[in-house]
Structures are given as structure tokens and as C-alpha cells.
Length: 159
Image (cartoon, rainbow, N blue to C red; front, side, top):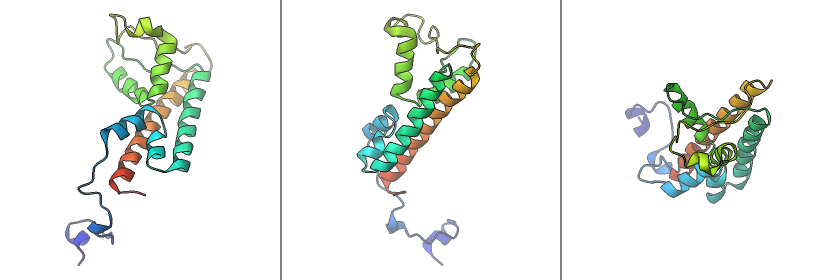
């Protein structure tokens, strides 16, 4: 019986020495950069094509959401669920932050009403408003998955 089967690992034939990632770690700075700029983490790890594909898809989804007059999520005072949506949109990294500055200006971001005084942009009466919101949320969640992929590549779980 292999070591994997005795540990309850199922039928995996990969041994521990082949790169389970135990003992290896990934720089927090790399993960931060991977979150901040979609695709940058893969680029730094030398996965250039993957970086360009991920960056293109996330950027295209974000721009599509903005063009459809979607609203990026911002926390609302009496809506605890809005924090989850805001964290999902925050996954867009610099794109989210630039959109907040575009809509609210620096004065709005630095006001005493932060974070409840922020506006997410978008036009609620526009035909594509809800589709746009969905694209913006999806782009943020995709980028968070890309950050997890950078982590997995960094520890050797994935190539």
C-alpha cells in the first residue's frame, strides 16, 4: 500500500517528494501583487501566456461591466450582506480602486463618511445595470481565484 492510500489520500499515485508543497511558502508580496494587478503574479512566476490570458479575461469582464453601467459594490450602512459583495468586487484590485476614485474622487474616498458615503457608479435605470454588476462581481471573484492559482504554483502544487 502506498503512503497516499494509508493516509486516506485516495488513489493518488503521486509521492510526497514529487511536490505536495509541504514546507514551501509563497511571498505575501507576490500574492499582494497578484491581487493588485490581475495576471502579474503569473507573470512574475514565469507563466507569461497564462498571465496574459487571465489579465485579458478579468480586464474585459471589468470593462464590460463598466460599459453596461454596472455598479461596483460598496458597503451600505444597514446591509451587512453588502460587505460580502464589496469584498468580491475588491477582488478586482487596482481596477476596483481606480473605479472608486473615478466615481467618488479623492475627496469622497478621504471623507469622514468612508466607507458608507461611497458611491459605486452605474445607472440603475440603464438596461444593462444588473448585467454590468454581475460582470464586475465576476471579474473580482475570478481575480481572487487567480491569486489562489498563483499560490498553488508558488508552493509547487501546480505547474
